[in-house]
Amino acid sequence: MEYSQVILEMLERIKVLENKVKILEAKMDNTASPQSKDDMQLDKVSAKYRGLTEYLLQSNQTRVTLSYSQLEDILGFPLPETARKFKQSYWANTETHSYASSWLAVGYKTRVNADSNSVTFIRNLTEV
Image 1: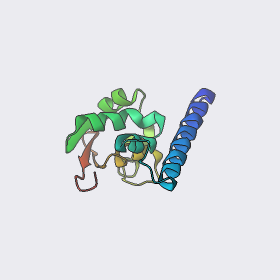
Image 2: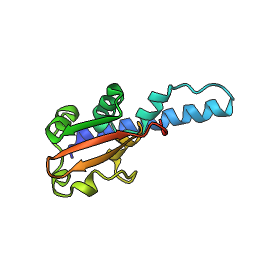
Image 3: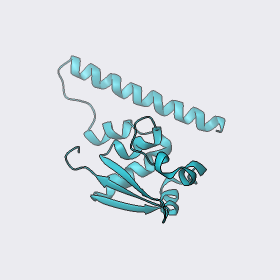
Image 4: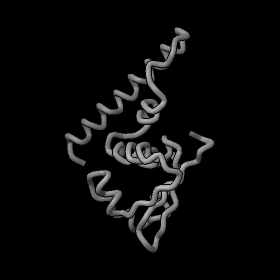
């Protein structure tokens, strides 16, 4: 990873922490949260994967199927080789993968189609 990328990600993490502090302070003061629901959801996503989160939010669809090349266009960088090699585990709906927060934070879960190299994002309307 490039040094500048590391710095950008650290700055993004600092921004997330600062926003969390504001939310906690607002709760302690019994005032309204300083952020909208969408802003709070975006805070959970790293800057690197924010493009996918914003794409899903703007689509406002229950099901969104994207090919790997479409995903790369949205993200602005090639998917890692593990996305192709270990499809089921890479696209797992787990919070232990930082990139998974890009869809989980906005109420989507994934299903990968290993044959066509595509991923379907399915919105759980009861969670959103």
